[in-house]
Length: 92
Image (tube, rainbow, N blue to C red; front, side):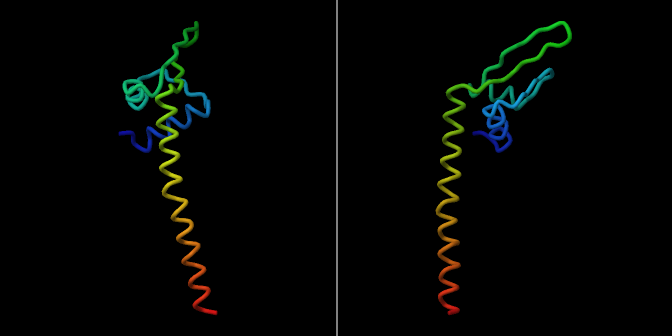
């Protein structure tokens, strides 16, 4: 089960925001262990770092998350709109 913080991290990796990790990061380690991301290691004379990128499993999990969000917010928005229309109809 991914937490909201894990989902936000996956979204930022998916949007190709630069995330360079030089130290241990428990969230990245967890996503790596679960197979949602892979890490590319870069070595230079000045620094060593790992650049995460999202795997197919990670993309599938993000798609599932986005569908869950839409499945919640679309009916909620329709219900609120219907409630407002019914209140206006009662007052007129």
